[in-house]
Length: 337
Image (cartoon, rainbow, N blue to C red; front, side, top):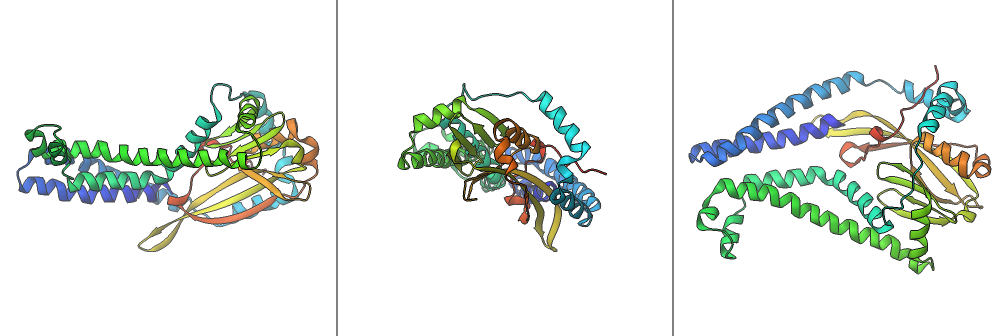
């Protein structure tokens, strides 16, 4: 998964850098050559690293033996009852620091979580737009000159124009993502006003509740409400509506498109906490660390968790550039021997 992204970025940069470097050489422009020479070298190193990472990923691929074994332990209950998992859970619980969001308002928190997701998923396009704009040498210097900003020397200096472009394009892209994140987070809160739930009431519950975080995902257990956010949606439900709390596990089968077709890149397992109403309707589900989910069940919903013994399991195929990985923020699968 990482090698596919790195390879794509490196080759785009490498090819554009070659064209620009030799174009600068043809016109005897030192500014262009000095700007793109280190980029050319760096992109070559990135391409080599991507190749080596791809080879290592291919060698580490195996069949579905692990997935089949994990699924069997999961549905039989052996996985969560094994001594390996119980010992790891005990250690995690002992070292866990419970916290609240007293220092951060709900609007700011939701905005940041939404923005982080947008930045990660759009980082490739931001990078491509920056490189292409820099290589195309958009005449920002001439625009500034027409507006009466800058000097004639500045407008004629290709090197300076490239630097300005490389700085300006990501900034504009980031500002657009900020606007999208702001509008989405505002829409989330406004939707509760329509349901008759005051934003101030939600904010108080969100600020004073016990928070469990996993990257951009969060579940907050307030005195009267339970809140969940995953960067895409924000949920708030009254605690008295929750009749059952269950597990869901998704196996993401990650692949990438290449000139040889779709290539398998690896698996990632994700654990979800699922809140259900009295009629079995799923109120919402949020991915967290597996030990955080058990802590929420044990500390806040012991009776509700006892009502749902069945564990949901799904296998989802997804392309690597559309996948937001949580592997660095979660505990690994604890398989019993």
